[in-house]
Length: 153
Image (tube, rainbow, N blue to C red; front, side, top):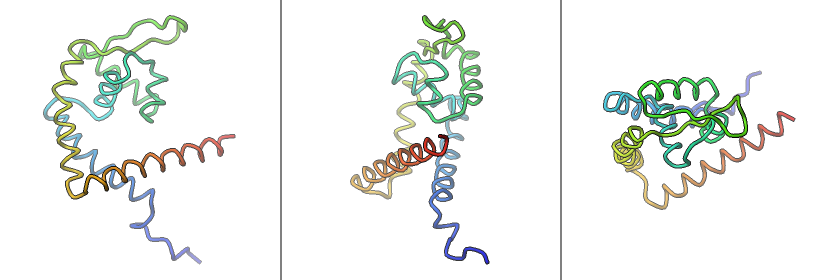
């Protein structure tokens, strides 16, 4: 007999996925048309701006994106000369990705739009609700990562 108490519309993984897809679609369309950036490329630019030079492995951990997505985004950004690669001082197989001055200028151009999109998406929430939402999402992420880590052992 099927499990009848579970409603897809109330199932947390589904709700998170649908909400994420809706927000990503809105932002992706704007970033692509205005700046020629895909979401993974924008995330890399933002992380490199915030954290400084990083390895692809560190970017996988920081962004939650897989290696292939990071690699493709990095290649696209390097082709546009928005990032550059530098040898890793301790690991000859690895390298650091570094935001170029052109990449920094693009970040500075895009960041105000990113903030504005966030404001629009969250416009129906109070400041307290926004803080609560962000805190809850961090806690859900932490719990999921802990559960995943246990399952991998």
